[in-house]
Amino acid sequence: MKTNPLIGALTLALGIETAACPNSAAAEPHTKPVLLYSRYYNAEGEHRYEPNGTYKQVIQRLREDFEVRIHNKPLTRDTLADVKLLFIVKV
Image (tube, rainbow, N blue to C red; front, top):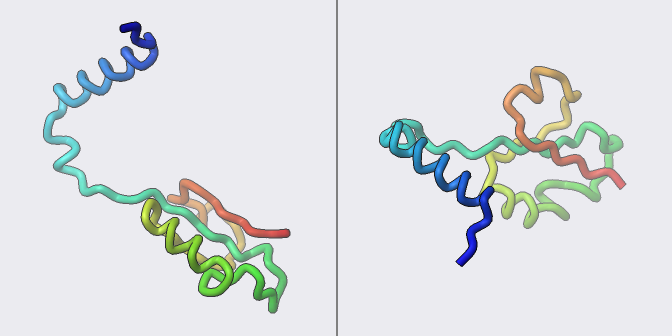
């Protein structure tokens, strides 16, 4: 059976990392990446994109894999400091 060289290299690298630091995964608590659902660009009074309305099921699903934050603050260095994924709904 042929193995893709890239997959083999990644497997090897992961194995070396695990062997070098066997307790590192257990020592650090698992945290989800932060997803920001920004409402900043929605017009005042706009209700089509409500996180507790139309997008409720989407937000619930995203919470399975992300720490979801929702706000309408301007997107600045501070508000995006630990955000890994930015979700903007604007049609």
